[in-house]
Length: 304
Image: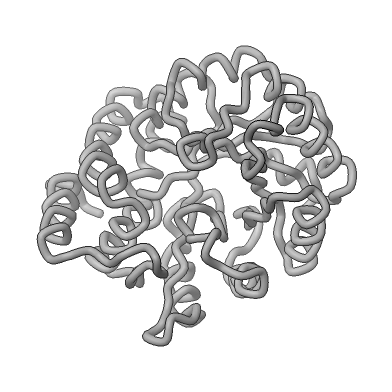
C-alpha cells in the first residue's frame, strides 16, 4: 500500500496481538498464526505486532521480525500490519524499522526512548522522531505510554511532530480523555489519534479519534469493533451500551492483571494465549475465575 492508503486505513480497531510461547519458552508460530486467522472477517482494521501486549521488551529482534513475516502471510490489505520497532537509540530503531519494512510492515509503531529520562526532553524526542520520519519509507506512528516509560510526551511536542509528512499518527495509552481531546484540537489535519485505553474508547471517538489499539480486542474483537461500527453508523446509544460492556474487561482483566490477564482471557475465549514470558508470572486459579466472570458479564445477552 502507498503512504496515502496506509493513512486512509489507519482508522478502526487494532488488537496488539499477543505472542504465544511453547513449553520450551520459544515463540509458538503455529498458535500465533492460528490467532491471526481467527481474526479474519471480524472487521478489524489490522493488527499490531510486537507491542506492549505482545511482550515486545522480552522478544529479541529475530523474534520480532519473524512475527512480522508470519503476520504478513495472514494479514491482507486493506487491513494494516503495524510493527512495534522502537528501541532506545535512533540508529537501532532505524535499522530494526527498515528490517520490519522489508518483511512487510505497513507502518511502524515507535515507542518514546526512555532510558536516559532526564535527557529525553522535547528537543531530543522531536529530533529522534523527525530523523526516523525523514529516513523511513513507511509511515511512523508515535507510541506514548508514560505509565510504562515515564516519558510524558507533551502536547506541543506532539503538535510539532504531527506536521512532519511521514509521522502520521499517535497511539496514546495513558487513558486521559482530556489529554486526548487536547491532542485532537492541536494536531495537523489528517493526523491519526488512536487510543490504547478501552475505558475511553467511545468518548475518544466522539472527540474525533480514529480508533483504538486495544488489548481487549485480542480476546473480544467483536465487542470492540461493535463500539466502533455503531459509532461510525451514528448509532450512538448502541455504541455507548457496548462501551459499558467493555468496562469489566478493563477493570477486572487488563488493569489488575496486564499481559497475563489478557493471555488468560484469550485462552478462555478460544484463542491461544498461554503463559507470559518470565519474569512476568502466570496467573493463579483465583485470578482466572475472576477473568472468566468478567468475560461472562461482558458477553451475556450478546450473540458473539
